[in-house]
Length: 450
Ligand SMILES: Cc1ncc(COP(=O)(O)O)c(C=O)c1O
Image (cartoon, rainbow, N blue to C red; front, side, top):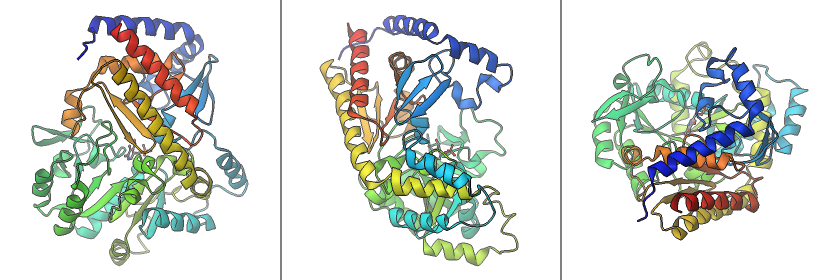
């Protein structure tokens, strides 16, 4: 196995930082100005998570590309961390925004689009009853509340290393078997051990033990972990998860917000999962705030039997702008014309091409690094073995190399997702975009190995 010299990584990083500073004077200026009015100089706190000294300010985005205010063009493999998996500004969505905005944006009354979207989500995911939110976070929040309500149980169960949005019960971690606030958790309202059980992904005995207490209302799970890098379930895991949840009267919520990359009906349809509830958001409205949660007839009956019309507005689910006419028009057009079966039939082979490109680079340079793909989402780790869970993933992280690949790519017109080495394909991404990434990655590995 070939070794990478840490001093070389540091020298390359210095060079790339200098290049970044020289190439982006206008973004630097705007960032300095922004610090005067925006907390941390950014409109949303995650936007500080870039490898350069400041984030790029964007001039415009279209399809799989965007330009910054210094006039550089980029291939966007971050795609708004999946919010723009549709590609930026897809024409049907732009037209639908104009059309619906002129006909009313929000009313506290349904439009006919809601019925179409409910039926289409039912067709895609196999769950018959739906409600809408403005984000995947809210979809998860409301699904959890409903599960607690109908089961009368106080806790939920999530996986170590998960991310399901800014949902209090899920900002947790396992520390030597204890449930603690996740590192960086801001103002946890209560001790998360009182709301949440946490187990490692792919650890069935731990799952069985956690559910055996009989106090868990629901398991909230991505069907493949994506937020600590892609970690697939081991063979048979989902069957056992479903068996154990049923056996213990625990509901199962599958969060498809990222794993929609696996196909038009997400991982759930591709693998025949049978959740009690399913949540989704991010690209559902082509970037216009949209989210949804679905449930089985059985869950729907339990909800209807235990909630009243008189208290529908104060029970802690829903929201004034949720289910608004604009979001629904955008969900309809996104499902009907953008994230279609045909789009996935193009996107997934491009994901395979990207995966193959990365693998070829690693093999050609005899580095034992690892690439993983889920549909049109591809991710690589500078680690020899695919991790089984979050603890293994964190233990073998290579932060210096991760930072370098992000900045190296950015300086050559390629945007990766900041939180890990993730590349996502949109319907507008081309073979040339994919091959450019392979080429740049190859150049970086060549420089590292001499
Ligand atoms: C799996 C998953 N669920 C839910 C969310 C929350 O999405 P949002 O921040 O759009 O509410 C995220 C965000 O990254 C996610 O990765």
